[in-house]
Image (cartoon, rainbow, N blue to C red):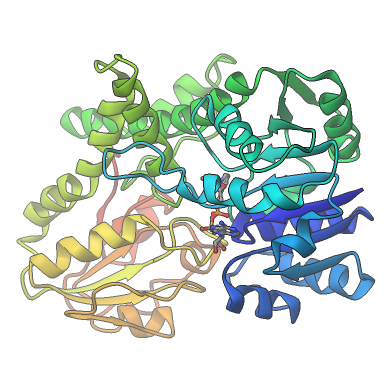
Length: 425
Ligand SMILES: NC(=O)c1ccc[n+]([C@@H]2O[C@H](COP(=O)([O-])OP(=O)(O)OC[C@H]3O[C@@H](n4cnc5c(N)ncnc54)[C@H](O)[C@@H]3O)[C@@H](O)[C@H]2O)c1
């Protein structure tokens, strides 16, 4: 099939490369000329396992090209995916200006019976708005659909090659069949529903996962009041098949480019439709307060942060990505800067691009912890959790904050650190 992918950011590059690897003729379109140039040269502007190889292969095969010309990308396309960003506006709702701009720009070049698919995360009703915008600019017949994206950064290639499900939001039978045909080689779990349901499913999915993280953080805080161990509590509840042992991450709260944005957008959407007393508001509020709350509590245990040498290990929002958007490290570093601590950051991939007052990023974990009074292991990068901290223990009292409960408390204590964790009594 001939496919156009509008927006070659994170989701756009992965989707383009995967469809091209299945033999489709794919054109990736972006308004950012530098991005188009580097992608055309086979360079991915971010780190994602397996993506660089896939991009190079599909470019070499001739199945994938990049452009900034709407005419070139759209004129022959049977299916057009809109995958531009949907940041939160000032009132918290999704800002759809990029989605609507893409709809307006593609309209004059639409091929007859093209299918315009919104893949960006958008509120219910957006496909109808997109159709309205296109209709103002063309008499060509077309249909719209919503196919939300569920990939996870860090395993995006694998997730797109083998999605747990493909949700197709359309009320048009032919459009549903065409999109099913496109996605069938990727998954046999294809669920067709109303566009509004597909759009709600995306927000509901991320909000549920974020709520799970917020929930276990609350339980962890209660464990600290009574000597219980949250990891034992997880073992105790997880065997219930309605709950499960997976996806429990007590820690500094959720981050990344999606969860914080999607929860706050759903909260704002709820308020806008008259449901202001909603769970999403509270989850968002608790997550924003999470890092300052923990840092203050830890600060009391270590005798204050002022002038402390602090190693912050793990700057990305999770392992296997260099994405630092809304990462817990950003809130931790901001807090430490306010408290006038000296901060030494380390991450196997991510580069710190925030405020650098009292902050320096070290090339190795050894350098970051070399003089540390406090080590904060924020993210469970394999390089961090497999590191032998006995080798770097200094001849002074040092605190070890296990921000994701990844270490064996007894081992860390045996190495003579003062061990602090999240809800482990
Ligand atoms: N990143 C993720 O892990 C992820 C996962 C699932 C869903 N999503 C959703 O997918 C959407 C895209 O996210 P992303 O992380 O890929 O965003 P991104 O910011 O990485 O990329 C967006 C791209 O769109 C381009 N763009 C903006 N306006 C354009 C226009 N009018 N025409 C052409 N290109 C344009 C930008 O230059 C940029 O390259 C968002 O709605 C996001 O919520 C993201």
